[in-house]
Amino acid sequence: MNHLKNKIKQLEKTALKLEPGQEARQAYNEEVLNYGEDFLRRLGTDLSYDDADNSLILEDIKIGDKGKPLAELIDIFTKAVEKPGINTASEGHLGYIPGGGLYPSALADYLAALTNKYAGIYFGSPGAARMEKVMVDWLKEILGFPEEASGNLSSGGSIATLTAVAAARDAHEIHGAAVEKAVIYSTTQTHHCLHKAIRIAGLGTAIHREIPTDQHHKMPLQLLEEKIHQDRSNGLHPFLIVSSAGTTDTGVVDPLDGIAELAQKYHLWHHVDAAYGGFFILVDSLKPIFKGIEKADSITIDPHKGLFLPYGTGAVLIRDIRPVLKSHYYLANYMRDAYSGEEVLSPADLSPELTKHFRGLRMWLPLHLFGLNPFRAALEEKHLLAVYFEEKIKEMGFETGGKPELSVVTYRYKQGLSEEEANRFNQQLIKAIHQDGRIFLSSTTIGGRTWLRCAVLSFRSHLSTIDKTLEMIGEIMNNENM
Ligand SMILES: *Cc1c(COP(=O)(O)O)cnc(C)c1O
Image 1 (tube, rainbow, N blue to C red):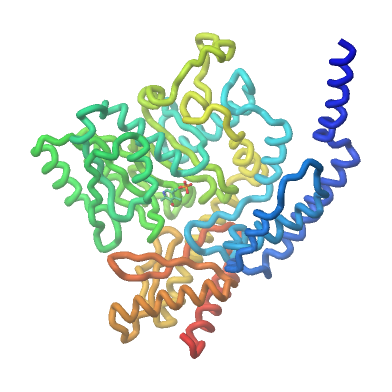
Image 2: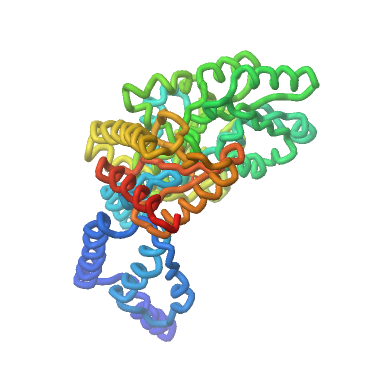
C-alpha cells in the first residue's frame, strides 16, 4: 500500500506541472497579452497576404519530454502561423468572405476554455446550453422564424448545411430506392458545401440539377418551375431547393419569396444558404432583398462572416424540429442521468456533435458588450464601401458585374482585349496583387471568364482601406511588366 501511495505521490509531483501557479500564470498572461497588443498594433502596416510559407519549421519542432519556454513557442507561432498566408484579421483582407475576428470573442474563448463549460447538454451546464439557445432564438427573431423553430450553433456554414440537408432528406423520407428518383435544385452559383452535404447525407446518387443563373447570377424562377414540372411528369421526386441569400462569388440574393412560393406549391423543402449574406438583414435599406427568407424550411447563417466573429461559428435554423431529431437525437445508456424525461432539447440533440465548443459565449459577449448599433452600422458601411469601390474601379477602366447588392464586387480589365487575352491579363493581375500583398483580393471564373473579386466584410475595413486598394491596383496596372 505504501509503495502504491509513494508511486502516486511521485507521479503527482510531475503531473502538477500541468497546473501552473499564480506567478507563472501571471507571466504567461503578460506574454500572451503583450503579443496580442503587438499583433493589433502591427495590423495596420503588416501585409494582408504573405506568400512566403514558413510553416515548415513546425515539422522540425519535436514534442519533447520536457517543456519549452512560452516566449519561444510564441516566437514560433509568430513566424510559422501568424505570418504566412492571408492575414485574415487585417483590414486588407478583401478576398473570399472575410469577417475579422472581434476582440471580445477572443476573451470569450478564453473564458469558455478556462471554465471548460460543457455546452452539449443542459444537465452538464444549463447556462452554456441556454446561452446557445438564446443565441439561436435571436437568429430566429432577426430572420423572422417562428418560436417553435429550432437551431444549432455549428462550426461553420458547411456543417450547418449538412444538418439542413439531412433534415430535408428525413422530412421527405428519401432513403433506399427513393434516393435515385429524388431531385435537388440549386444554381451554378450555389456554394460547393452543398455538394459535400449531399454526398455525406447519402444522397450522392440523387439527381442534382444546377440551374444556370440569369444575367444577374440569380436563380431564374421560370426555369426552376419548368424543371420541377418536367421532373414530376417524368416520375421523379423533386424534394429540395437550395437558394442563396448572398452567393460567395458575386454576392447576390436569389428571389427568395418567389422560390418560397414554388416550394410551397410543389411541397418542396426550401433551404436558404445565408452563410455570407444573412446578417445584412439587420440593415434597414437592405432588408427588402431578403423578403421570403422567413418562409424557408431551413437557413444556414455564419456569425463568423457577417457578425465578424472568429472562425468556427456557423448556425443552422430549422422550422420543423422532427426531421432534425430523426437524424441527430440519440439517448445513450451512459447518459441516462442527463435526461429526466421531460427535458428541454439540448444542443447535442440537434447536432452531429456531442461534446462541442462553447460557441455561444463568443457570440453573446460582443453582442451585449457593444449592442446592435455598431453591427448594423458596420454592415451598412461594408455595403457602401463595396458600392464606392465599384464606382471607382469603373472609373479606372474596368468592367464590373454591376452595383453590388450586398458587399461583393466583381470586376475585370477588358479594354480592347479578346476574351482569351482578357482572361490572361486578369490572371496576371491577381498574381501581381498577391505578390504585392498589401491588400488581399481573390479571383473567380464565371462562364469561362476570369473575374477579380473584392469582398468587403471585415469589420476592420474602412474607406481608407478601399482607397489603399484602388491605389495599389493603379500602381500595379501602371507597372511596365503588366
Ligand atoms: C462560406 C460559405 C459557406 C461555407 O461555410 P463555412 O463556414 O466556410 O463552412 C457556405 N455558403 C456560403 C454562401 C458561404 O459564403
